[in-house]
Amino acid sequence: MTGSILADIWFVFLAVSPLVALVFLFLWLKRKAELKAALEEFKKREADLTGKLEVAESERRQLEQRFSERLDIEAEARNARVERDRIETEISDLQSLYEERRRAYDRLLEQVAAFEEQSVPTQIEEDDAPPKEN
Image (cartoon, rainbow, N blue to C red):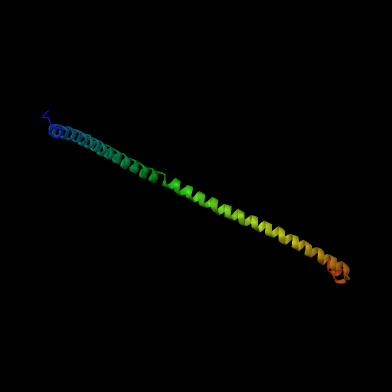
């Protein structure tokens, strides 16, 4: 244009830079408006969901009050099952202990019987005799 490359570059820069600045300003304002609209939509949805959450919490509290007796009964039944399981375990332990001690008792009776067979059974026969009538 003027003959000097540097002058041409300078001219293009001066001519184009306001145009580029206007384009960036326009894009920035457009994006700002979109973000503002998105923020408003977000706030609207947040308020709507907050309202729904409050309604749901209120309904939950009403249901808890309505069925609190049943919930208490279920908790009590759960506690009773735990207690029943504990008692059944204790009974099972006692039965196995009884069986073990019964076997030991039977062995001792066999040993006593064997010992009595070896000794003279004089007094035992008198105890086993029927009572005398007067």
